[in-house]
Image 1 (tube, rainbow, N blue to C red):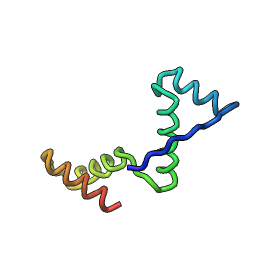
Image 2: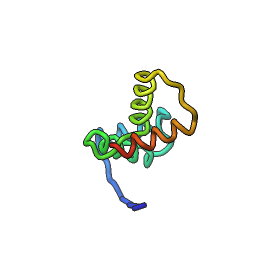
Image 3: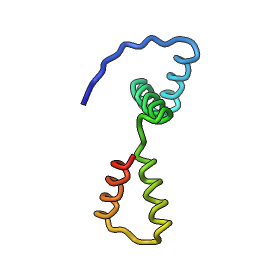
Amino acid sequence: MVQEKLLVRLSGATADVLNELVRRGYFATKSEVIRAGILRLGENFGLFKSAMHYWRELGEEIERTGRKMTHEEIVEALTRLERET
């Protein structure tokens, strides 16, 4: 796993939004806000898919087939969906 350490200087609206997200309790730290923002950008540009994406696809598959799945089958299906995308 690659790890990056950055020093980021923010001002104006960017700093205000960052502080407000933490103040309102959406995130515990400013670092969490930045990490979430990077992942969201990665998702928007097709570089990353969130776990919710795979759960949504699995739910659609279950609804389409109407079958009940064991825990092992769910794990296998999620792994398969992740590999396919």
